[in-house]
Length: 87
Image: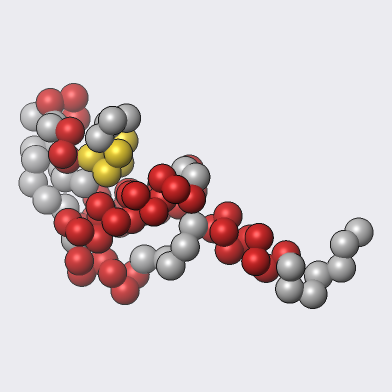
């Protein structure tokens, strides 16, 4: 089975067929879930990241302690307001 043959339910973003949560043979893989989180954190908006995070954690609850609490962009905005002088 190839990625193209995987069902939509195998992806964290099924409408775009992005971030597969299973191997190409259709077997569950925690490493695929971890990779989906890493790439989603780097490549997506905060809204998409939260959707992907929820789907990954639903399928792989063992990843719960390893997942960042929020998307990096929401963290950046809060760190800017903490005492940094504007230039």
